[in-house]
Length: 332
Image (cartoon, rainbow, N blue to C red; front, side, top):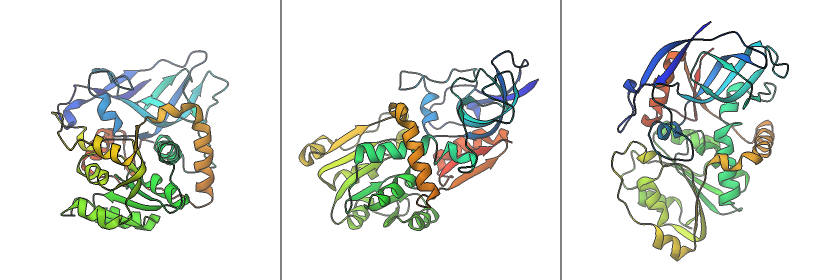
């Protein structure tokens, strides 16, 4: 059978454009022994994919020019020569951007559709939710009464971080890029939310929102927001360095304040992390997140784009702040 696929056509310089993506058609043979044919249902687009479009060593191998892009996806088994994956099974895994995929079943995990909407296994109960869970609870370890700041708080990771911090009894401040996102954060229970795009002085706004200083900072963004938070750190503050989307498309290394003296004076901990570092503990994270979701303690928002052909547009929209919560493409 034939299937559409989306290839990396070229490596971007600065902000990616549609020129980086090439649509193609592949011929797929029938599944052999041990294989399954998957029909893609939902595709996740995530900021980390921007780094994979570059050459060079990183925590994950770069995409290859001329080969399919890939990422988290929920798919349905439509043909099977693998008894462990019968027809009709729903699975989640790291899969190529294709409408249909031939798989040997490795790296696929079952999707318990009775627990939550299946797209949530790319968001709240998937990689973003687990990133929030381990980054906040393992690295930041917020305590009741402490102040937690979350940048990129209306994104798929940030909104979960804020709600988890509230479950721990902390006071939570989030930054986001529109009044609508700020209103949504208040709806989720954030104590303060700041529109960094319309705030004339972000440092002043953060200082006003955190009069007792900052004990935990979950950094999804970097840049001026992070510079401002570092001036508010309390003694023994903890910082989880999750993302730096403000600089992903920079063509030159940005020059900013050097944070070392502020970390030194406050005895603060700054730890970068990748959710894959916690792979052995993912079942723990999924279990706890599912439990809190079922208890009504966690809400989640998705921005769903429809159509396989719209995957590049949904991805590019991440860098314009078009999504609230998880950016998802519904393929079928």
